[in-house]
Amino acid sequence: MGVTKVFTRAKASPDSHFSSQAPTPARSNSAVEKDHAIIDDSPVKYLTWRSFILGLCVSMGGFIFGYSTGQIAGFTSMTDFQRRFAEYNHTTGQYFFSNVRNGLIVGLLSIGTMIGALVAAPMADRIGRKYSISFWALINIVGIIVQIAATDKWYQVALGRWVMGLGVGALSSVVPMYQSESAPRQVRGAMVSAFQLFVAFGIFISYIVNFGTERLNNTGSWRITMGIGFAWPLILGIGTLFLPESPRYAYRHGRTEEAREVMAKLYGVPLNHRVVAQEMNDMKQKLEEETNAGVAPWYEIFTGPRMFYRTMLGIVLQSLQQLTGANFIFYYGTSIFQGVGLSNSFVTQIILGAVNFGMTLPGLYIVEHYGRRNTLMVGAAWMFICFLIWASVGHQVLHSDPTSHPAGVAMIVFTCFFIVGFATTWGPIVWAICGEMYPFRYRATCMGIATAANWTWNFLISFFTPFINSNIDFNYGYVFAACNLAAVFVVFFFVNETQGRTLEEVDTMYVLRVLPGRAPAGRPPMASWRTSRVPPSPRRGSRRSSSTRLPRLLLLLRSLSRSNRCCFVIALNQRDL
Image 1 (cartoon, one colour):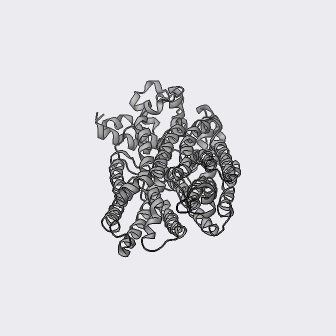
Image 2: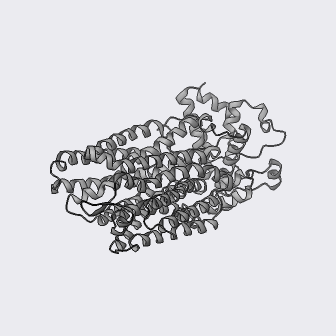
Image 3: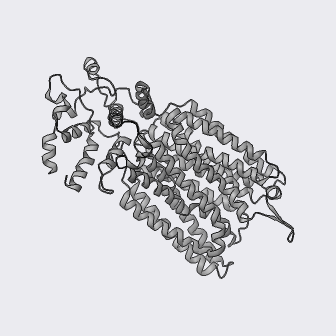
């Protein structure tokens, strides 16, 4: 069927697109006809203080993530920590961490995070996003207490990190979910990406604190760093209680007016503004579709509309974020810098942490101005080149001459280049994409599974890196180079551009099977809202007021916003429906 013919039949009156009267979403048509609500078309601010504060506060969950993972690398090099928890070599008279013990202390955090990410999903759906965040911040505090109370039992530290990991993993799932459901769409990518910015900031701060305490020859060298860690979950847990619930969660639980008020405040517009009306209408339509579909069993994350595709894509993207080799660089960076005479590992960590944090800031700009899809492909290609050069120099030169100064300098430079590529692209943007591509019905479960995949690879890399390095040394870099090359093709063939679209529009793109790379970016809400459609109230007695008299295709077209119609046109053209 030709596209022109379809839209000739489905075309509504032109006045319907420009009417200043529209139904207030989630209210009955009769109530609307009585009120004759006037739609406000005033300009929309790019960012409001309420949105900024909300994003800043909940991003503290990312800071906890970074601080928890960054501090342990310094602990294993501290004299008092080694004396209490490491093994003693009677031949050399020195303390050391075996590969197994070191891997368990470092890696059990990742096991906890994997479990926490999965458990957090049903809790977030049951008690809400913001209360889930506060609860898991409390669990993080319990894990810190278990660790800081340890005296000479290494497994107590490992257990404490496992408990702390439960909180970190849950927060890494719920926080991006809350951000994506609450943020105005023109800043949604940047706000969700701020989670990764705070991860990098937390890593950097933990390195600085470790650098300041490592000179102490007592428990203060590591307990001070742990003790400071109490502040971050307290700020998050208490601060989140003063924030509103996600408007999409509130709407799904019958709190329609609360959802409308929160949406209006976050956008900085009146309650009757067109952007609020459109978002509320989109949520209403999606809720009606899902209500008609009945209760969702767990397996619908694989059998629902285009859900197997999206569930697997989220798992692959989160896995590839780890397989870019970022954690390997942070783990192996000390040895690289030692090759050029910089033997203080704490200084090494600060340098890497500073580059990581400093370059994540531009990533917040890039994600909203250059899109998700192209940025990920460019970033993966950049990291592929960096790792290819890094591994080649290391294998050909440093493997035979570990003291080669030029080779060491080259590896430092390309290590920093790699971090620049990761921090501006794959670090923040993967969180944004995974927060956008799932419908509300499955979002919590799918994000939990995707985040668990991220932490699974985090554990595998952190635990097995010492063993792999001892066998293949710098050739390990070729493995990550290959993964980055594969990431380019994964994004090119499977990832849709979601910049500037509402979450409901993104869902429609996937359901209609719009091919990646063929759909344009959405229109930001600062543009003329005359082009966006809020369905007018049907007139009594009108033939169009009865949906039962409309063909199924025409009914679908009438229910779609203008941007979703664009997706539908693209799908028709591609598949010749």
